Image 1 (spheres, rainbow, N blue to C red):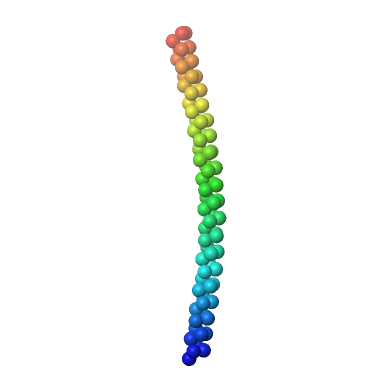
Image 2 (cartoon, one colour):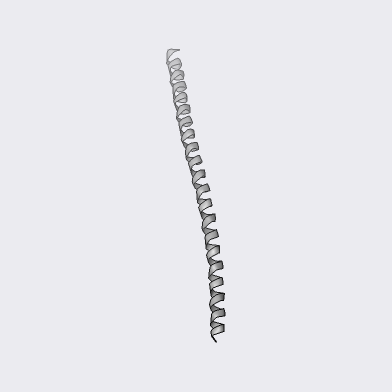
Length: 76
């Protein structure tokens, strides 16, 4: 009976070791995915800031053109 208990305990220990290895692998994969997602988020945030700046520049240019057109309309 003791031999069966030792075998059962050894089997359970092996199962737990495999499960722990799986969890460590999953944890490492999640860390890498998280790092990648943070990097992508940073890139998208920078891209958004650039696009907002360009949008503001275009808006200012369009407003300036509208102002010049109105001035030409009133001056003609």
